[in-house]
Length: 530
Image 1 (cartoon, rainbow, N blue to C red):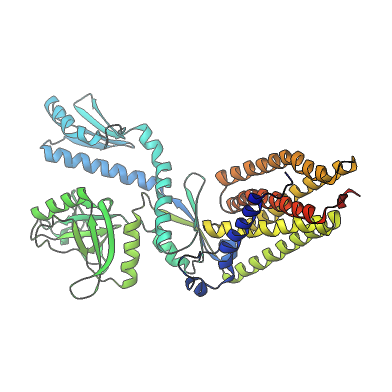
Image 2: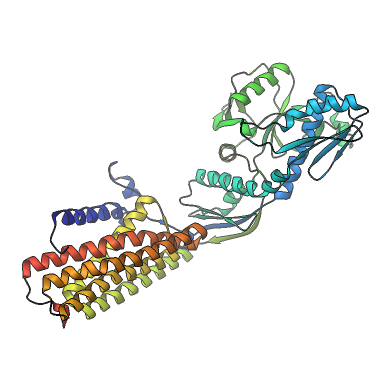
């Protein structure tokens, strides 16, 4: 095991080359990195929120409002289905899970049951429907959400919100944002390097529910302002506070959008180009063909963006939203639409801003603590095992640190202040492997074995202990990474990388270095045996 094998030398050389290649960009400025040739790596270590500065938001998902909105949608679907089927109920009674409709006779109940059954059908062959329909006594029919659907609405809304928030933050260009769940209904967003927390909050917090609805031209807006609003319509306003009476029925929603982008209208002013998917294109084409000459409203989160008049059928599914947009507002709206709509409103519970000065202080403190920890380890190794064996261990530590920086640069991992603590702990774990090997060599030499036998036994007998120790550390790090959040995951990630790099650097450098020393010096006794 102590032989100077060619494959060990090649592996060590490749490790050094990898470390230098991927760690080198950290010594360059951003402009110098961009000037590097395309075949060279350009990414460096991303600093976390506590080192780089940025924005911190604690958001709470309003599950109750989301559930209320879905129940309202169900009641509107029931009313629309009955109206289409020509069935008129005597009474409509909403409850906490659905709606119950009462009819004059059994014939009305049968017709309603047939008309409402499609509302409970699932989207796929194997999908479980979240709605149920029941016949009740006294000629009643009840359509409601199942208990399973009501129970999973909250957790599903939080999970979907996390993905939507992640897409929106990524679109802002923030590197390595941390978006994690906290408790049942809360989300923590950490955006390193984001200097405008107001813009971050504005983009994240907007629900972005986009709908296309017909303007009600049959009823008077003045009467609606006086409080007389038809049951199938609602009163909405645009940015200039102009009132519109809009049909409640949604023709097409933002869920059918496949792409949105910033464009320009015929006057060269900023506009938003969009495209629907196949289902949305069909619905949009049918709606525009049936309502030529009538105005329709484009609504975002209850606010009318635009209310153009349909000039002709649009079967292609492509369209443009015009209005009083600036380049910035159009770009923000495109980010929202492409990121998807939030399933429920988000409320900002807590907001914090970490300034660059605080980040710089944390970086300096981390560098000092790392340097002090490294110096103490180096001093101990030199005092305990001399300059030869101690120096080989120090070279292994240097390679270990180089490989950690290279691995974090290559994977784009964020370095946090707890991550620096993990880095220091990794150095201790790495040198611990050398201590185990050297102590075993010392024991073998004191028992009278030769230098070669002592060296070989040191690696052979200590390797099992080294593997066991690193495996337990790796398991602990993986548990912290899976179940932890924020700083805990940063610590666990650095520690996980360090486990693999320390196994490579501590053992391989010691084997190659001592094998080379044995071949050149041909010693008669082991220097650390005294």
